[in-house]
Picture 1 (tube, helix red, strand yellow):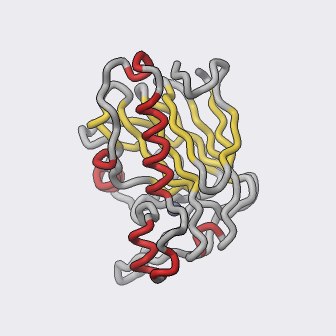
Picture 2: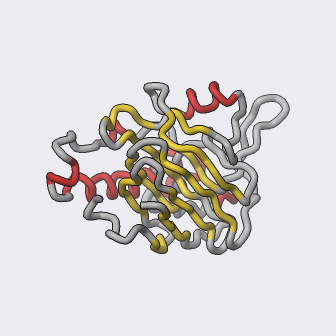
Picture 3: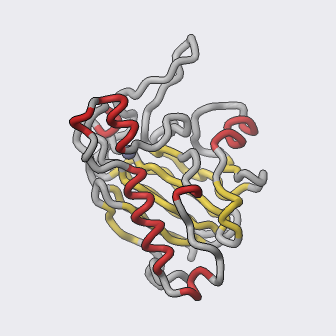
Length: 218
Ligand SMILES: [Zn+2]
C-alpha cells in the first residue's frame, strides 16, 4: 500500500484545481463522485509494475468500437492489457477524446489573459512530483514519472459530443450532483487524477467544484 493512500482505503474530497495520485490493487474499486454536478475529472492510469504500460485512449476506443466510455468499458493500455473496467456509471457516458487542459491550450483557445490560470496538466505534474518524492520503497525502484508520461487521458463526467460531421465540442455536462462512476482495477494500477479547474468552457459549468474519491475492496 502506498504511503499516499490511507491504510484503510481511500475516502477523500479533492477540491477543484487539486488532484490525487495513488495505487489501486488488482480487484480494488475506485468510485469518483461528482459532488455538485457538471465537473470534469481528468484521469490517467498506469500499470503499477510498468509505468510505460499506460492508458491508451486510442486502443480503448478501437477495441470497444465506441468513442464514449461507460459501464462495461475496458480501459486498455498501450500494451493491450486491461488496466481497469468501468463497473458502474450513473452518468451514462464519459469523454476520452478532449484531452486535458493546459496553460498552452488555454492561451490558444481563450486568449493570452488565461496564460496564468491553473490547468490540469499543471496538476498532473504536481501530483507526479509528489509521487516521485515518496519514499523509494513505495515505488520499488521504478523510474520517476515525468511530463513524457502524460498521455491521452479520460475526462470523467465531461460531455464532448461528436457531431454528425465528426467534429468535437465541449458542451454543458450530463452529470448532476451525486452522480458517480466506478472503476475496478484489473491489475495493480497507479491512478493520477486532476479535478479540472477550467473556467473558460462549460465542462465544469463555469464553476469548478469538489469531487469525492472512495476506494473499496482494498
Ligand atoms: Zn482541465
